[in-house]
Amino acid sequence: MKEKIGNIFNLSWHLAKVNFKLRNEGSYLGIFWYLLDPLLMFLVLYAVFSQNIGLQINHYPLYLLAGLIIFNFFSSVTSESASIISSNSHFIKSINIPAESLIFSLLFRNIFSHLFEIIIFCLFLAYFKLSVLGIIFYLPLFLLLFLFTAGISFILATLGVYANDLNNVWRFILQVLFFSSAIFYQYDPSITILKYNPLAIFINLNRQAFISLQKPEISWLFLILVSSVFLIGYAIFTKNKQKFAERI
Amino acid sequence: MFEPKPQITLQKAGKKFNLNLARKESALFRCLNFFSSKDRNKDEFWALRNITLNPRKGSIVGLIGKNGSGKSTLLKMIAGIYQPDEGMIKTEGEIVYLTGFGQGIMPKLTMKENIYLIGTLLGLNKKEIDEKYEEIVEFSELKNYENSKIYQFSSGMVSRLSFSTTILCLKRKNPEILLIDEALDAGADLSFKNKALEKIEELIKGGATVIMASHDLATIEKYCDMVLWLEKGEVVKKSLPAEVIPEYIKESQKNY
Image: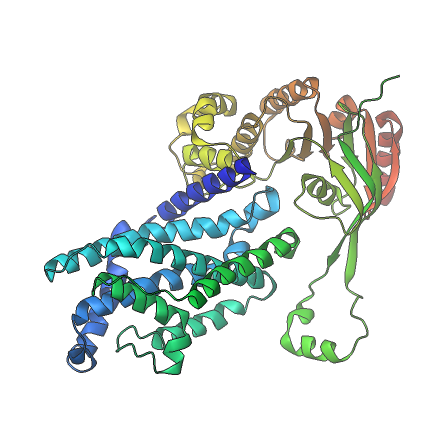
């Protein structure tokens, strides 16, 4: 058992490194895209909203960037996971590898780029003369985000084997989530969609930690939700993974 | 007398595939099909049926048959990549599955990166691959190309690299089961083929049970203790090579 987990971890880590390298293959700016992607999005939203919605929000640039970074992690992992099994069919069909490692490698690779974004965020904090100590609270929050994202990815990866349309459907859902997660406007728990959107809750908790330096208040209900998403996703995936090789 | 326990046991194993015909994929068809229960099972296709096999430990079984007769499906089922839909398959010990089609090779990576990738896919960690790296490069005879990317390789080079890496990245020195799926038919030249066969012989001497699928009847005849002739997923004949191969050749020529 211990050997098996070590094996999955080792393989996921290696695949993450390989794909990180492959993504930058043949592009001029290479690794800088990891910085540029979120920054460009930030600049656009900032230019549009800083003089209206943003005026009522304290430290609006930080507020906006924190939202974008958290959302970006979730969306870049899940948007790829729907097609991850079929795009790695050459592995699945010829080597008996643990299929979970494809999902974990996707998560690990996005942690690399997430780290870059966190570094930018810390630079922002320093520029606005705020403490970077909030990062202590951030670590357990990230663990929860990781589990939640992994659970959703497991479900998407399994469904994606059976229906290619899932990619398009999920892209649309991500867009809906983007506008309903209080990324660029004020978070208000009295609005139903914000109260029940897990991403909005994640983003709000992270802002509490980073910007207000408060210990994030995580409700039991939320903890149970996150862990059950992970467990259910993982169960669905492992139950179906033996059928993947013949479906793709 | 002491009978060694077989490492591979297949009992009436079978595998079916659902044929995904284009019309079946469309939404309209699915909706119609949802309401009418007829012809739901019509497009099933049994790739293998009723395969019973339990080779002695250390024996070499050859698989012959036309394209699409189920050779690869059988090997993939033993390797655990496919699950049987009927009957049962039991294996014991480490399984090595070799194919000649550059399994897991990434064309955009260099040869060195590919060796590390395949090694990791086969369950080795970095240190273990470090130890075997030199030997792999030497065996593949591709010393000067370590840092070239694979898409510039010829297909023979890819097949050499793939074989060398897989066979030398074995977790233990002696795998219990070796499955060879035309690993030596695709692209490698004669001198490499002989070298590769030598390596396989070494593994056989170490006590591995081997199942090999090949179109190279001379190799099958030379090495195998038993030959399984498959046709449309079913066993036509299972016997000594000297009995099966002439008949298979006769049958193939007749159809021609």
